[in-house]
Length: 214
Image (cartoon, rainbow, N blue to C red; front, side, top):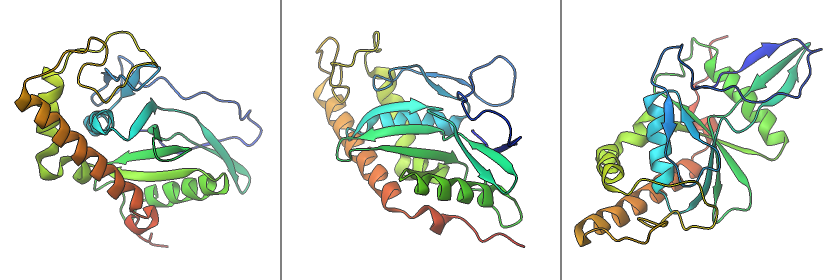
């Protein structure tokens, strides 16, 4: 997952997000076959893959971009860099929303992780940008992920990206329909994913961050 890092203040601020899908490195890495992503949707952990699966299912999500951009800002004499995990566009909102995906134990009072993400949120707020935190517990509640995994194994594979399709349909490229049972499961999953996204969006990110120990 993307981290906040320190770079020299004299270094150029024109940076591109790193390519996270590489042969080396730890963790699960790969591409998610998203119909909502103009560029390949990349993940580097199972939690990020689960996040992409839920965002792909949520009908309110119009577009998805992974490692979307780098935010740089100064802290004292140093310049810091922060890259959100995912950016989404929501049908009911006329702006981009950024998501940080974390395991539930990622933020502790004795670590600097909470301070770093809190500083990144302050910077994004100054730019009138929104950053929300998605936890593993959000993604696995109510047995959601096994349901989504089964549906995506059954759903027709996406073809080349097309901006003119309705990605919320079961098979927007070819117009095929699943069985009545599968269609009901798909519609139920869409409703659950939209409800999950609304809960995450309503939650104040500051409320889920512990107060660090001085």
